[in-house]
Image (cartoon, rainbow, N blue to C red; front, side):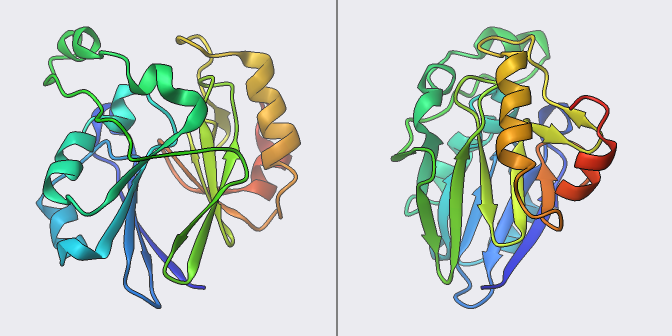
Length: 208
């Protein structure tokens, strides 16, 4: 299993959109579709290679371009966390207008996925880990030695819990009892900012 990762840190609030490619099959997935542009389209190439558009949680900066992906790649399946339906279905129009952005809301996912379920992309598998705290239904995605942490865990920081459905106790529990039990060599690809590792965050993150 070999997974190639490319990041586009251009979404609203400098959100990281990830394009992941299973190198054995050439199949691709987008994780956190906050950004879509010609660069992403060129890197995807053949529209039939994009199999999934995956949400870690429902905040508008992470779903901002979901509608464009669904329109441009009709064969790809939109995947959302089972416990995140409230925010996925929320009308974010007012929030976006406040920031001077367009009025795109998230389409209805084709697939809702729950804790410990696995999604297959060619020879790669994606295990979904329920990590409430930043939002009530947020999830992280583990594929081999790579973790896509959404807004749960950042380099030397953690997700904001003051927003709707956030909970500080749940966030700390998710990080300490789920993410920090992973191998220390696991590379963390967060929803904002730079990559890190589980081991480094266990040693140095001042919030947990």
